[in-house]
Image 1 (tube, rainbow, N blue to C red):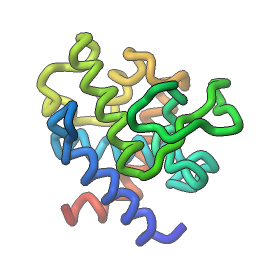
Image 2 (cartoon, helix red, strand yellow):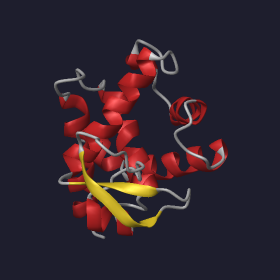
Image 3 (spheres, helix red, strand yellow):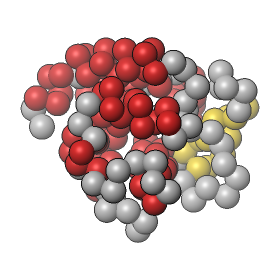
Image 4 (spheres, one colour):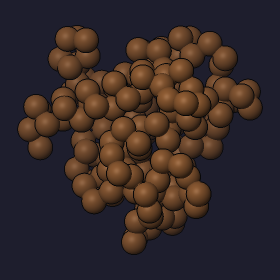
Amino acid sequence: MSTNTQQAYANMIFNAAISGNDVNQGLPERLAQLLVEQSAHETNGWTSNFFVHGNACFGYSCVPGSKWQSGCSASNADNGAKVGYYNSVEDSTQEVVDWIYRRVKDGKFPSDLTTITTSDQYASLLKNAGYYGDTEENYVTGLKKWANILSDFFSKR
């Protein structure tokens, strides 16, 4: 995948994350950057089957009745669950932004989202909230890898 295509996806996710919706006010810019890194990590640079066929930017599990999902994957993810499919990258992003705001309400994320500033901190919060099953070390390594790859994109924002 070309750098331009990666930057286009990064831009769509970033803009959706900071824009908010009827349920939340959007994310602070630094957290939106971390969300872009998360998406790149979870989709192998937006090349995964789930992303290509269902705009699944995060591998978020299929949830019956989700207002953002348009359906479910035919195959299972590595956690054994179906993945939610979406009509757009923006819908997939809003699903996870809403998830973050639910974690704020249940006390698993800080109420001041501007305090989430590092890959290590973000990965720890996600892990402690039960978002992923990988080791925290592997997850942080993936986030940092994509931070480096996307550094030109982030520096132009």
